[in-house]
Amino acid sequence: MTIRAVVWNENVHETHNEVVAKLYPHGIHGAIAEALTAGGEITATTATLQEPEHGLTAKRLAETDVLLWWGHAAHGDVDDAIVERVAEVVWGGMGLILLHSAHFSKIFKRLMGTPCNLTWREAGERERLWVTSRNHPITAGVGDFFELENEEMYGEPFGVPEPLETVFVSWFQGGEVFRSGLTYKRGAGNVFYFRPGHETYPTYFDPNVQRVLRNAVKWAHNPAVRVQSVNDAPNVPVEEALEPIEARGLKLHADGEEGFR
Ligand code: ZN
Image (cartoon, rainbow, N blue to C red; front, side):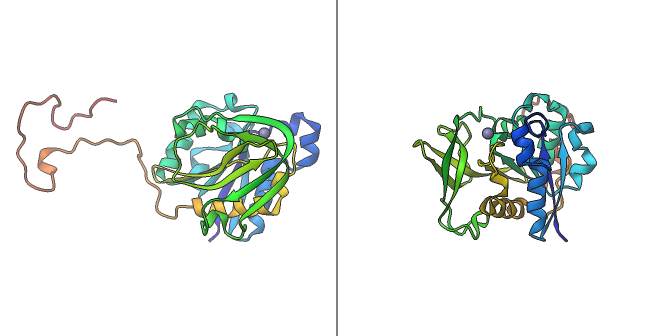
């Protein structure tokens, strides 16, 4: 069975800017989905901000192994309830890949708990992505580094928590560096942030970028049965303790009480 990926895009630049529309006639989401599916191991479909529930119904998410997220101009238009729904599904085990300006998306900030800010410049600089974790499944087949002739610069400091692994570090012509491939675990879910992908450059047609995205989907896929009720916090009664115990001392909570939230 193939891995079921959904490529989510706010789909705003493609419909409002001629340069982007020309570059990505099927949208950034369309280009990424085609690249993912081309490998034969992934079946990728798309969803956009404009669809009911942003195309991310509970049913759709339950049938999604890995969600990819591209957003930029419309982070604020994403419904908070949908963000919370996606977060809970990630905690349950769905993979999530955040692309480029998704560093400021509500879902990334929700899962990181930090500002996720960075420095930036739109000057078509060369980006050289160095592999910093040899033999990592996400960098398979990439070599020691690869280059993108034109990219937007993102620079440190990047306001994210320390990752599990840094798999790419980028150098830019202007001299800045940036941790451009970061892995996280959130609940049972694997999370990957991948920096390249500015909308006015053909980044998602680059063979190395496409390879990394396919690798990342496979890495992020957690085949285990999804954890349900990720917010449960049960009060286990004394008589259900695994070893026999007697309740001692003074108590605040009544037996079986739900507890505070
Ligand atoms: Zn950008």
